[in-house]
Length: 93
Image (tube, rainbow, N blue to C red; front, side, top):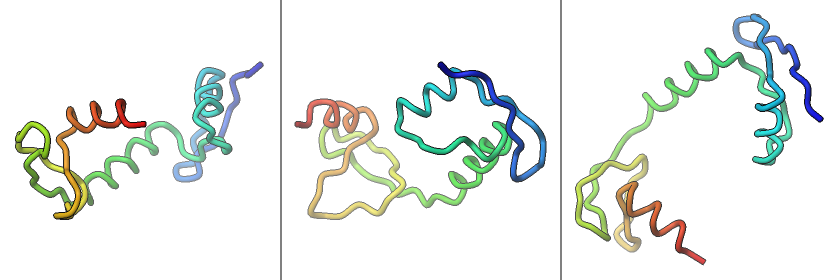
């Protein structure tokens, strides 16, 4: 169904292969557009976004463990560490 495609990165102009497997993954996730950046530039952009994130110290509402989250917690809502969040998320209706 899918075939490898050669695309050109909008940032560096380098050609890169968008594999059939990656195309299938995009379809499964409901992503409608092909990537516009090569994998290296996508990783660089992701790293830059993460570096700009302001992290906030929290105490997990479930287990009491200290953790960091990328948002300012509100007092009227529970805040979970990543382990507890995953458990709560998978058991939520």
